[in-house]
Image 1: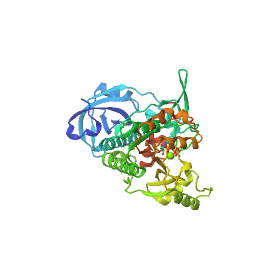
Image 2 (image 1 turned 60 degrees about the vertical axis):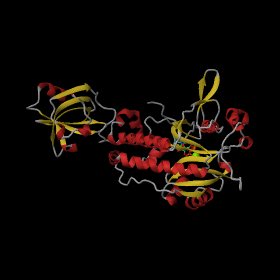
Image 3 (image 1 turned 120 degrees about the horizontal axis):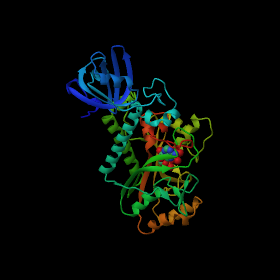
Image 4 (image 1 turned 135 degrees about the vertical axis):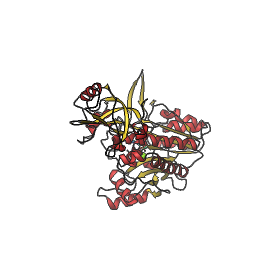
Length: 430
Ligand code: ATP
Ligand code: MG
């Protein structure tokens, strides 16, 4: 029976492994193969004089990245990876790889990201690339577990919708029989409706679609969003949940992914410490004013340059709070004492924004008024407004970008590296 390569030890005795041919070396009397599976790499050594005809024939024919099944005794071998080697009694080619390969898996030739993404299946065979997605999986597990323990209900909301969340042009129209429809840019309206449904604490991890014509290292046209909404909570309470969700996820990855972290050569994987600084928007603008060349004033969006300048000053995760109401969507709750600012926040990593959230307006008439103020038509939000007329509890929530979470956690250069098959303006295949 096949055993995972990292479990093969000299004590295994006779073992069978399946994997890909990572490297081939022929030293005259000896042929060396490195065989790789998801868990590791093992050396397979064929002494040509002693090996059977069948083994020799396969070994001669096999090409790099072919899938093989190999069985034989395992011996200690200090110089080999993992301190052991296998001397095969059988060497079966399960699936022969053609040559040349479109991408070098051994990484002797560093490839451009575009070339890597064109042959993503080969790129993912690289241990350090694969490690990113093993860590992403662990992070998603940690988040699901966190929400479960906190009493959240996992929901799935439609991705085909009739109306925009915030109006605007960032929508992909789709052909939906004889109706106008779009891919949803955010589960915002649906998770709020779940508050009227009495669910109290909901979360969703799912795709969001943004038709932004961006060409940056942090924007995709299809991203994964981690969204929560909580009844009877204010913005401060959901900020604490966000802080704990981030720390719990880092802690879990740190505990359970040490091999993957080593593979990625991250020397100082640091779990962020709470509490994250709460920086008022007005102060954030003042910091940016001093540090960046382009003009920036109270009321402006915080662009990439400002984001980085403020991040440099803060040094770790932090929140920007108390945003001017005009910079935030209609559903953000204004402060009673000063309605020109609202109970909205962004969670920032020093490199970029990770999450946006707020306490929401839960009063129907106030919401209608705020929708109008943004120049939108309440009529097109009737499905959303209806629940606000029949008992809507106060509530708050946030949306956290999963791809950016992984990008910043692992110090990747580009959000595309954190996504299996990224979608951007130029990439629809594979
Ligand atoms: P940005 O200002 O950086 O473009 P945003 O404020 O438009 O982001 P939100 O609508 O607040 O984004 O979405 C919440 C979170 O979802 C963001 O903080 C980000 O982590 C993630 N996100 C949003 N849009 C994208 C995108 N196009 N690509 C990747 N992640 C995204
Ligand atoms: Mg935002």
